[in-house]
Length: 441
Image (cartoon, rainbow, N blue to C red; front, side, top):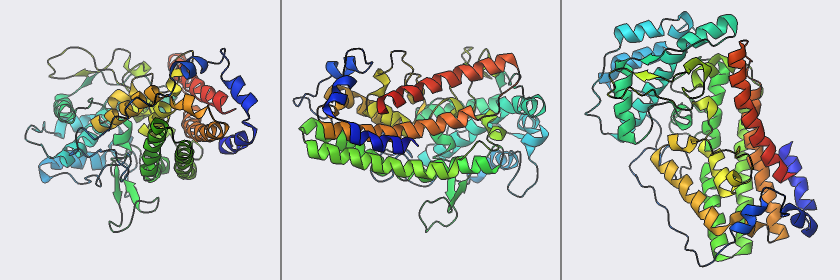
């Protein structure tokens, strides 16, 4: 719907429309006038600060890891691997797992050793351990909430203390990777797949999740859809850098071509997500485990890590309260974070701080360059560029709308406290979508 709406916009984007768009009362006006393109500003080169990391942003792999995730841990971590295999509500063989019976917590406390990870320096193993420990941490902390939710549609309270056999190795691995000790969006999606046929490319039919919470079809589609869509982010990244370079060099035709390339690539991303994320279905069966420990009713005082030298509670956004770097890139590239008078647009909530270092660095680079060059201002100086810019925003809106719709269609909880927290976050996301829609309309 929004793609069609954006396509119509190209026909009606005339000079009078541009003048109306830049009137002082429009929230974009201050940004447009404050950041004119300056051809004297050098377009700073960007390289991955940690080229050995599994997550390196490039026009080859996009936002996906540079090589397929490690799906089997070294034998030293056999018990961790075993618990994660037994964890899902519904296991791959059709039997019921630890989360279904409410026995995950007891299994962790009784059976999981506190593994020494100080000797692990291999980046691929570290990334796999970060995925596995952060997912296990979420499952352990939120297991009581899932049980309560299935019975009463109330979340109740999560576990307050993360035991040392998860907390200590998770913190060590997170520190070594320069990340936060929590489950992050790309970890749950982009670093959580394996190919069925290693000789075939990544596609919806050739990948499956490595780790799961519920084991339901919707969780499978959520992970697989995001990975298959991210396969096309190489072109999104290439187009984004092309937009910046063309604006820097004042090459209007190249700028328009790069905008078209961005729209085409993002269109493919949105098509794949449309195939896999239709309707909410049993989304609620795994969404509980995507909640974070920040501003959530189930963790009203945060989470404590056992055997941590600091007594300060940990508070982080969860996968369900954040977004993929694809959304952040569009926000930074098109300067959307400055357009809302309420400051409600994406990336104002600190979600980028949770991402892998190379991804954080790339998004910071795009944000700084877009501000310095005045990408939006440059686009609005030409009716053709303005139209292409609106089309690109249409794709950003489509992506954001789908995230919002999944959140909106989540099964509402019944308690007043949980409902208030849910609707407060939904209101923020609604503002995100509406503010972008105003720019496209």
